[in-house]
Length: 307
Ligand code: SF4
Image 1 (cartoon, rainbow, N blue to C red):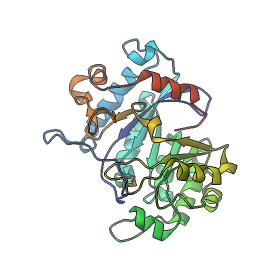
Image 2 (image 1 turned 180 degrees about the horizontal axis):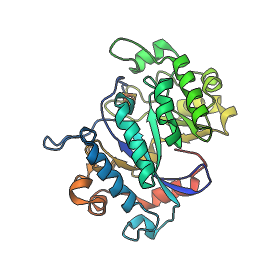
Image 3 (image 1 turned 45 degrees about the vertical axis):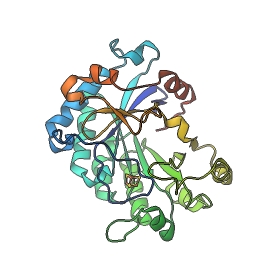
C-alpha cells in the first residue's frame, strides 16, 4: 500500500514475509502459507534474496510503466517491509536484506514481535531502517499466555530489554519511526495501554481488530473494538485504526517462497502467484487478485510515517 515516507513523499510498501517460523504461537496468527514441496523458502539462499529485491526494485520503480499500479497512481519511492513469522529468528538474513535493499535503492522496514530485538541487533540494523514495527498485544503475563505470546520456554516479552533496544535504535538512527501494532482481541480488549505507550513512545500505533483466522474464539464485536479505541482516544495523534475489512486485497504481499499472495474473501484461504523468481514480477503480479480501488482509497487516507 501507499504511505507518506518520513520526508512526506508518497511511498509504496511491499510486505515480504521472509519466514513463517515464529517463537510465539498467537491463537489468531495468519502467518501460514500453503507450501510447494519443491520450492524452498528464499532465505535459504542469499543470492535468491538479492534476486527478489532486484526484481521488486525494477517492477515497483516509480517510473516503470509496465506496472499496472503506475497507470492509476504515483509514488516517489518503494519500501520493503520485512515481516514474518518472526524475522529476527534469522538476524543475519534480516541484516543482509536491509543492507541489500539500501544498495539497490529500496527503503526498508521491519516488523517484529520484539522478543529477540536486543541492543546489539538494534545497532546492527537500525541505521538501514526507516520504520521499526513492534507487535505488542499486552504487557500482562497472563494475557500474553492466553493469547499465545510466549516462547517454548514459557518466556514472555521482556519490556525492559525492548525499551533498551528501542533507545539504542533511536540513538543510531534518530530519524527512524517506531510503530506499535496491537491486535485487539477477546483477551485484551479491556486493557489500558497507557503505560506501554509511555514506555516505548511510539511515533505510530496501529490498532487492528482480530481476524477470524482459524476459529472465532479470539474475535470481538464492533462495540468491544470501539470501546478499546475510545479508551485510548488521547493517543489519536499517533493511532491508526484498521478494521479487518480494510485489509482485504489492499496490501502487496509476498510469502516466504517468493510468491505474491492475497487474502481474497472469495477464495478459501490465500490466492498465490507463481514464484516471482520463476516467472518474473510482471507475470506473477498479474496472477493475484488485487483491488486497485481499495488500494487507492487507502492511498488517499495515508498518513505520514504509517506502515
Ligand atoms: S508473533 Fe506474529 S508471527 Fe508470531 S505467532 Fe504471533 S502473530 Fe504469528
